[in-house]
Image 1: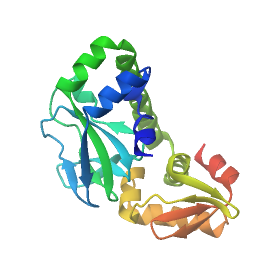
Image 2: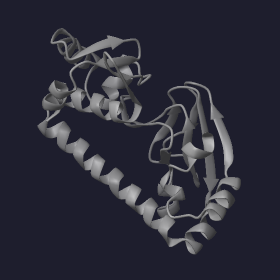
Image 3: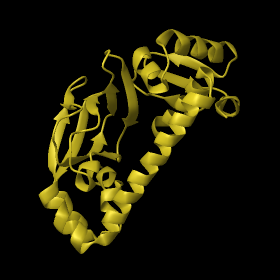
Length: 225
């Protein structure tokens, strides 16, 4: 199962079975406990990582100590590839949201693969372009969307990746604290909690510890627009 999840990463795009097996064999297993930091913003590093199991968050801290979450990543998703195209300090801090199982790959191991398989480089660039597009969208949301709209959009994004359909709705085990969810939205915890309580009172969702059950997906989607 871990091999199947691992090969969902863009890193394996366009590789044949033999090349994929060779690349996988050159990767190193990395495990983190919940709350453990993989690397800090500003650290040097030339490793990229693929999440096999669990969730990890990427965040930045302002000079006054406020934290903003840039992304929550789960199985099959990749991060740290920016160092291959633009070597320099890490642009974010990576912290385990749950216990996490990952695979890492260093620059020396990846370089021959990129030379032999240009499609892999294209896939990595495509991922970076997608990340930039999402960053631009987040900036636009911060300017043009109110907090409830951003909360609805964040829940829908989490549901698309971590949701599980059931008879009573979409179960989204996001594993985030209220503070982390607020950091992801870019608002205070009190404002985000007020939006969630409003959605719950309208019957759009049901709140559970570190999870939510979306009861009315259509209404939530309309609120996110």
